[in-house]
Length: 176
Image (tube, rainbow, N blue to C red; front, side, top):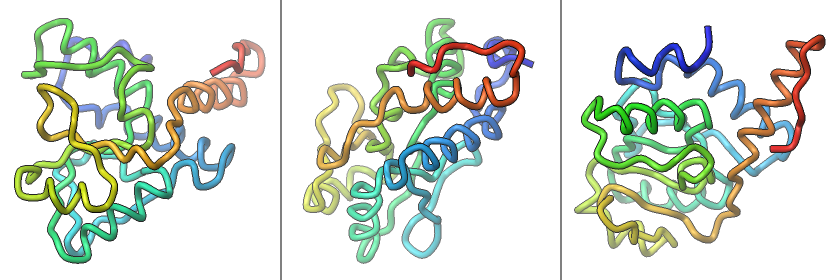
């Protein structure tokens, strides 16, 4: 089954969660600390089963400092190229109530330093105090940790490496 199979049904990127976790884990193997897992609990919750709980190490540290004194409800964190592809196609099709979506490869969420927060309005100051920017026009739930490296493209490279490992007779370029 290809990712494109899901462009005309459903509205959850959970359908590619298994692949997305493999991509995130491969990134962690390729470049330790460029993407680290965080665990929901205490003041940190995720709002759905499609949220990948990964961020760059500095972004994770900053998030955990915020959650020491504040409840944070995360709608989205790191996204893989597979997840972004689905969101962008659904946006293009006018489906799923998506009012804006970046092209795959251009999403801040693929950078490993972006979050969408459900209870954003009451957390802007706490997030800003830990280095989170809240400056994407028309996307009030969105925060970027600009002090973290931008790893966009590593998800594509990770996918390519996984593909080649599992399809030795049909290899593709590993160029990210």
